[in-house]
Length: 165
Image (tube, rainbow, N blue to C red; front, side, top):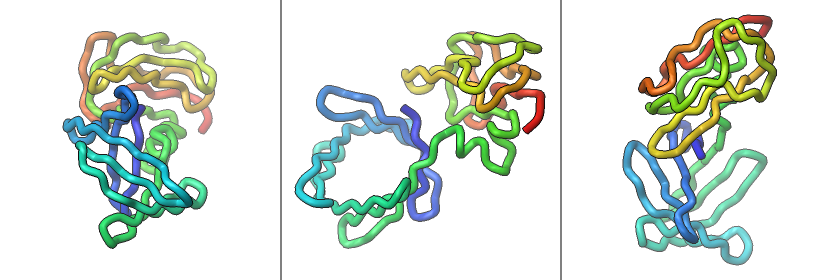
């Protein structure tokens, strides 16, 4: 699953994929085994690439403070749709951008089709993980940036919707 984090004010994109009793963390093309083992209270052990590090976690809504190696870091998890739908021309404005490079597996709609919020528009694959690209709102398909089998870069224009914002 794709995650967009802001860590100490810096954007960090990552994918988490189940792998046995832990996860594979995919960040900047690197795959690292990762596991979080909860302990008492707000304490946990972060196992990253086989190395255990004790951490303290404090959560307030979608904001998380992680205390690790003597420093506290603010971590904010954002959904990809909310992030890409921000004022810089993302999903809520009818523009859907690629969260990371990949390949279009299938396209479920055609230009001119009316779609409803949550409807699957296309399926993409990035780093061996499939993701359904869904309509962020009701609208009509204005453009499709790619056909099945085509590859794209991060932030490539996948779909635009006509209609009221």
